[in-house]
Amino acid sequence: MSGDFTQEWGSERARAADQAAMRLNGVPAADGGGGGGGTFASTPAQKRSAANTIETELEPNTTKATEYADESTSTTVKGFDGWDTAVGLKKVADTWDQHVKVLMGRLGSEKGSLRGASGLFVRNDLGTGDGFRPLGTQSKLNGL
Image (cartoon, rainbow, N blue to C red):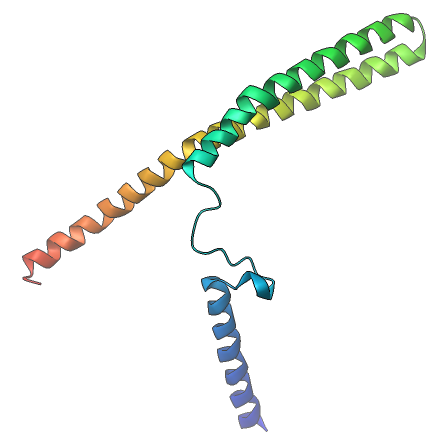
């Protein structure tokens, strides 16, 4: 009995390892996997375009919408001066402003990441190449 279990266990482990290796190498999208074709999800031009959209559309439009909401809320708070409603609206407005600040920070961060991604890949490639250079030199010294 123990031998059968050990043999079956070894067989199942080998099958699981094969499946894991296949998944790591990519699964065709038709099978429900991500299965990218070995390419990045976007080109450097698409990254620049996305960063420009953040800078020229999302950030300014978010700022305008926030200013409009702040003006309307301030007017309403003044209209309810002396009531508990004014205190509640002020608290909501403060919370809103905090959320907008986080959103604007996130947009700025994403914009910077998009613009820096291509340079990061180049630096990574150069660093990897530099790491392998001593190996090539060593091969030449050994007459390989």
